[in-house]
Length: 254
Image (cartoon, rainbow, N blue to C red; front, side, top):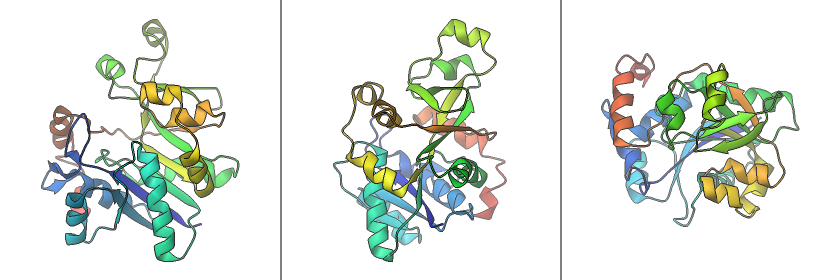
């Protein structure tokens, strides 16, 4: 199958402007995401999708695949859909599955990409997958920058929220609560369909793309990852991630 990774990235993050090019151990964050994603040999290739000349310039100077997209996109998934169509036109070849990899996941492991694809490769009816990971602390559980998720007994998402879910008492009783990890494979045609769906009230309220899928009546398969990563939403997160990556074994490979 023709499976391609796309990393949507923009400089205008409301919570941390300019974060894709913020330095972590000598490289911009977006470079860490790109090189680590490229290590997943299940992907035919990886591209950065951006609307910013600064990111494009860095990519071109450092031989990173880059696709320029519209500045109008408000959702990462919309930017990814535009980039996918441009890549197909460039290569004159259709893509089967797009793995959307958020540009603020510099600790991503290539095995995470393989984990996310496994259900889709075994069941043609699964159209979109998300990784999820255990929340490690009460502070993380309360953090609005962490998107929490609850799933049914078959690991299909029931709801995503920036608020603590399930509630505090349920967390005290539950063995584990979960967060969304933004490694998200879409089947090609479903990504196009998703991009054409109208934005939905809960998606807008929570600022979570996946709620558009649930509100329109489709399913999101969740996969639990064993890998411990931290996304970068604030300058404080950047400092924490840089400390955590000091002894990261993958860095010496790129």
